[in-house]
Amino acid sequence: MDFFDFHHHKKNIRYGIYNLDIEKIPPDFPYSIGIHPKDIDINNIDSQFQWMKSMIFQNCFAIGECGLDSFVETDQKIQEEVFLRQIQFANEIKKPIIIHCVRKFYEVISFKKYAEQPMIIHGFNKKESIARDLLKNNFYLSFGKAVLYNLSLQNTLKITPLDKIFLETDNEDFNIEELYLKVSELKEISLEHLNKQIVENLDTIKNG
Image (cartoon, rainbow, N blue to C red; front, side, top):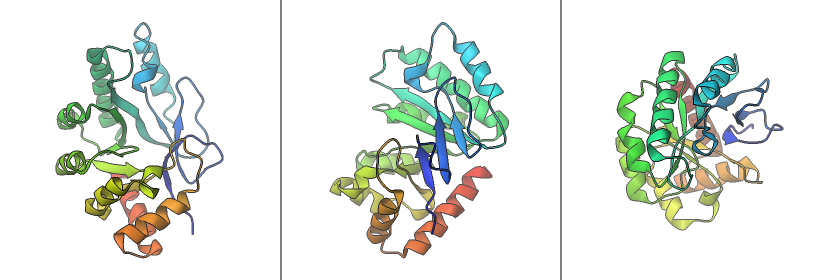
């Protein structure tokens, strides 16, 4: 059985969504493309958008990572402008949006009203109350390695509806199958059921 890796940085994983780094050439398998908050070049934002638009090929699955990060040096207002432009671009080309968020969840929620396409928070590992607020606003949550050992996050995953879940390795070095096994155990469902649901979720976000 193959297990879809929703967000990863490894070119040897073809069954998943590869996160394309800024100014790189896309691979010949599914990828996401975006301007991460840490990569915003305030003197060349327009050319960064030109690069992104010129690299939208057949295998482009999503826009991202994009979002808001309280730890990067780029001014919050500029981060918000770049995030909004990427949301508008995703609307235009009808692609889901993979979101990077660090300590800005309620600001990200406030941008949901601009999005016509599904929005997925990648690498979600925060408390249950934030998860509930995101789910209430129709976000999807993608979980990573922390689910294997973080008991609080395991409880959060238990309350997350199956049709709002994705699983990912991000840049961690472990086998995605471990994560699927753990989640099937936490959700008390078969591995086959979980795998089938993830594929259905992918179809849902792909079709808007």
